[in-house]
Image 1 (cartoon, rainbow, N blue to C red):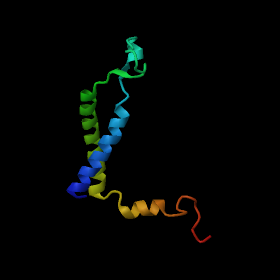
Image 2 (cartoon, one colour; image 1 turned 90 degrees about the horizontal axis):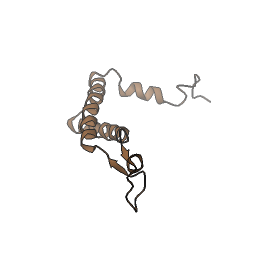
Image 3 (cartoon, rainbow, N blue to C red; image 1 turned 90 degrees about the vertical axis):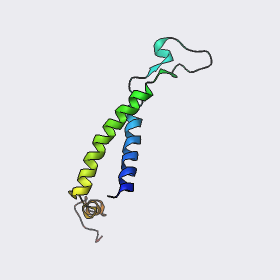
Image 4 (tube, rainbow, N blue to C red; image 1 turned 30 degrees about the vertical axis):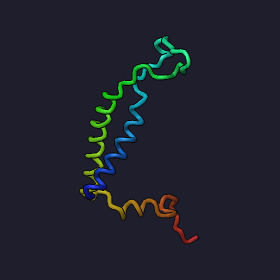
Length: 97
């Protein structure tokens, strides 16, 4: 894994983690009973984006470190992945037809 692929892998993991962390602890206008006229009751009042970005970075760094360790140590190689996803590999029968 090169520098560029490591950065791309981290960015993808960060984005996926951020989408998971984003709805945690959101306080909506409806929850606080303070709905501004013209807005939806589900509009966030307090979203804590700064804290969520920091937590996302920490969690993504741990997940990235585990993924990079597996990739760099070659515990699972590309040949292994190709074998797993080859047609008929999970069905217990060959691809002879």
